[in-house]
Image (cartoon, rainbow, N blue to C red):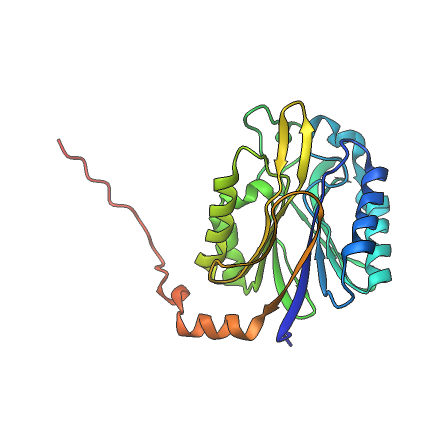
Length: 274
């Protein structure tokens, strides 16, 4: 049974490049100082373990079956009695490496992982050189609420979000390490994914310096199904929360049932005018 309301918290941080242990300490400090006792789901940013430096990815990689990162998140979940959507870390699965989002339940159990499907390899970034492409979207039910999982560059592909909505998603999640030079695409696309799918959207990213003159954007947002911001962290580090009302969202969907108007075929007629 879907809960009437669910309280979610997003954590924004500036990762120390290449230092998994230091970043675990920072997560624990932020959670201990900033997480309220009534939170149902905590969400972390992309590659918080190592920061956005693709060349550091493989040296930080951990086998999924024996990951200290998973064990760390499990201990946080059990201590605070929360579900965790664990941002992402670099995992080794067989002979392949992935940018992996783990999901931990209140008991500390790893319930599923999502491997990032779209790898960003432009403007000097080379993610696809180091990690493999994930196979499929993953939706997970936490306390009866369906969360559709995505990571960073996935936001540019509305098809995955529509697939989640058709599959019954209530909340769309994008865990990112988004560059500071692209604030408009980040805000516009995250709000668009919420509006066009009539879902809540949790869009969070890292903050702080990456290297040289490169910075993460920050500007993490909790967005409702109409595109309105419920809460945000525009800079720095911290935790921000919001209560998501499922009944209000379902009522809105019934009154404005836009998915009923989707056509089965959108074949384009190409006209050549001479």
